[in-house]
Each structure stands twice: as structure tokens, then as C-alpha cells.
Length: 267
Image (cartoon, one colour):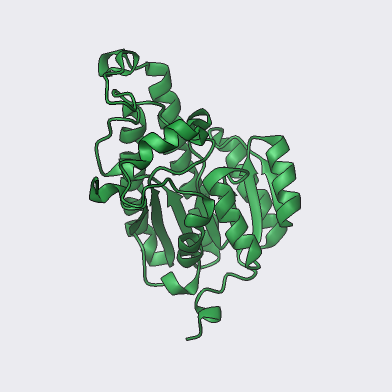
């Protein structure tokens, strides 16, 4: 098979949650630039308007933690486009700093016993519960059209402990990763493939955009064998692969894109 056919996503009706910036925007760009019919769900009206115009995409201002609003947005998208082929379940929130500072000292306000219950609940609401609702909505429509792809943004934090990332985020992403596997198992009968992309440290607006700081990037890059953090174009090829015919026999997988961080420190 020729590569042009193997990775063909043209005309696929695609929804990207949290798609107006960061990793979600990278997914939306990759799909739109290759002919997919993209709709971005996001809360930021300015970014949503700017990026949908730039990409020739549709946009819906949606709070994914509001189940009724999320369901309506999916229903409207399918009513407009006629079907639903691909969903990038990407909307999420970061966990902030961990129990160590970037210079290896104990970060007292982020100690386990000091963690804020309100923050815990906010992270789980967005990174687990809203993800559950997104998969539900996608599956409902994809069953009607006899198949589809659901691609979830998890994290390398789902499968490892963290010193520099907040504990609630680590626990939530572990839950998200298991939710991917469970959904993949049940939905396989309907030709709905559910896979995860597990990024390492990427420069985005997450956690207040702290990874955009040069000093933070330099400190974290020391722990990456490739000696740098990830950027949007580092993840787009994987997004295209999972949405395309090239991944037609994959479900329940978690694909890591982290510059080698999970391998360990390379000096």
C-alpha cells in the first residue's frame, strides 16, 4: 500500500477536545492539513475563533465538565456532518509542581499531606470524569456509523511515579489510561478503536504555561535523553497514524512520545 493511502485521513469527521491550543491544536492541525473535517471543542473563545479560522475548521465553545453541554456539542457536530469518525479526547488540566522543586529540594506546600482536596477534585473532574463522558458520547455516535477512532491524551505519568509533577495528576492519568483499555475492550465489537497517546514533558499552556519558561525547560531537559522538551510538531505524526488506516488493527494501546524520558537519565 502506498503511504498516501496508508495515512489518508481526508474527509474524516474529527472532533478535538481542548483543541484550540497546545497538544490538542497540534492534533487539529495535523488532521485539518491533511483534509479531515475538523471541529474543535474549547473554552477559550479567542483562541477558538483564531485557530478555527486559520485551519478552516469548525469551532464550538464547550465546557467538557458539563455533561449536557458536551453531549449537545457532539449531537450538533454529527447533525452538521452526518457522522463521527475520529475523536481526540484531549482536554485536560495539569497537576502543577510536585513534592520536589526543580533543583531537587523538598517543596513543602506540595507535600502529600498538604495537597488541596479542591484541586484533587478539579483534576479528576476534567482528566477522568470528563474523559469518561467524552468516550460515552463518541461511542454512542460511532456505534451508529459502524466504527470509529477514539484517541485519548494520557501521559507518561500514568505509568510511573513523579517527583516534579503533582500527585493528583499522576493518579488521574493512571485512571485515564485504564479507562482507555476498558473502553477498547468493550467497544472492539463495534469496530471502535480506542488508543492513548502518552506524552512526556511538552511545552504547552498546561499548568499555567510553566513549561514555556526557559529555566524550567532547561531544568527538565536534563532528565531527557534527547536533551529537550517536546513541541507540537513532535506529536503530529503519531496523531495521524492512530487516526489513519495504518492503525486499523490497533486498540487498547498506549504509545509513548517523550524523548526517552521513561528510559531514565542518560547523563
